[in-house]
Length: 235
Ligand code: ADP
Image (cartoon, rainbow, N blue to C red):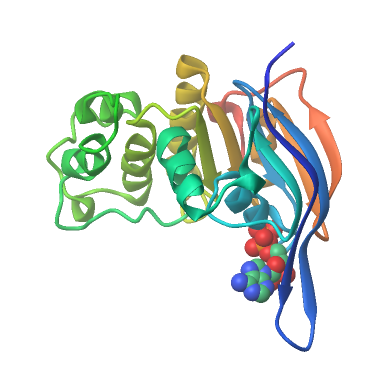
């Protein structure tokens, strides 16, 4: 039985804009397990990013409780959440947020310079298939390559958790598959617990677990007995 990495209980997130209250999360109970790659699916506005940001310590829940292993994230102040993020979490977003004036290697070194036990930037870039592009600038790379640099930057500090919000959202299918392969490679090689938000329902076929969101709640959870390799996914 796998270890529980994240547990949430009755998590809500309410945006109070004065006239209306928006329930971005309306009571979410979930468990995520060590080493699993989980895909979050659901219509736009159903609460996926809000949940990911709370799990990653980027945002506070309005109510309910969230644990990372036996540490209660909902009990931490901003400083505690910053330490939690620094020590445990890698993030990948839809837009790569690379520094244009730095090479691939230098972009990754921004993280490895301050992490306690990082891998060399060249090793991280090798893991995402870019070991031969160390000295290239973002402008010399395709969108998929830039996203793989962003993944290398996220994993170079050896995080236990990798949280990805629409990592292939800006990519075509060929470069998207290379990004998914990089994520699967990291997940299998290091057992990094990985959560991927996507609009693309086909991507669920590579997940261990698929969680469907609707109106700020989980509508269904599916555990895949058989998974596809990213290259077998047609989209
Ligand atoms: P998803 O990731 O599934 O597209 P989100 O988590 O981004 O959904 O958003 C959930 C709901 O919360 C949406 O209705 C969105 O408009 C609302 N929301 C998100 N952020 C804010 C905010 N800062 N202020 C007000 N409403 C917000």
